[in-house]
Length: 326
Image (cartoon, rainbow, N blue to C red; front, side):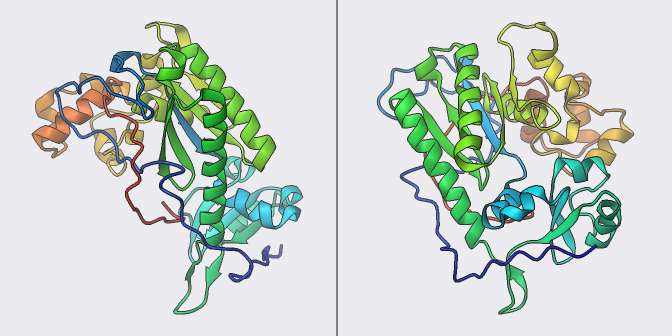
């Protein structure tokens, strides 16, 4: 099976940076403080509101980097299962390839062996050969700019300025719609569904969206909404509300998905902790003695395990480098 080589001259696609005035900031998670922040004010002079009644969306583009290649080479839309790789690393996988056993950061030769039998193709990331081989981000940055410009325009038109949009990475965003919804989580779900459907119709990019009372739960909900799920997960405002409650979401979330635990899967497994909800039974001293966390980090992770996160959605846009493999 031949490798798919997508023509993408670095000179044919404009490499642009995101406009900090038209989108938003790159937040880096909770600050670990135990005190509750004061009431927040949304951009545009909206009245303060209770953080416990926030309505926050986390929108995450599915297979973003492969979608960028499909924009520039529509043949890929009918090319079957796809695996995007750079040099010696798999960085993006279509759902069909994932079902066949391909995983991120797998060696491309291993991935090739898995997709070959199901009619799949390997696609190399855009790159430059000088000085030395490296990924070229121009096409990905431009696509990200389009998505965020589209989001800004749609939200401005539909919500009349009553929102805060934060760019969390090249392909994901947090959106606080509390001022527009008045704290109605189901209305937040309707906004999320409309954005998700219109984004695909207008740009060809599919997204998964989580809706919850805080950033952490919204992020975990968007993960739960990814294929083969239907793309939308609204965390119920009522405790014990079946499979959509915050506690159920934590019970289905692998513990390493919590911020700060990404590289600790083996340590957690050794303690018999597999889900975020499992962490709730871990005593405070165990976070320090058995996992080596300091007091502040231990307190933050204990709060995360219970779905607590008071960190606001930020409209600022500090500079941050972008990486295809992140």
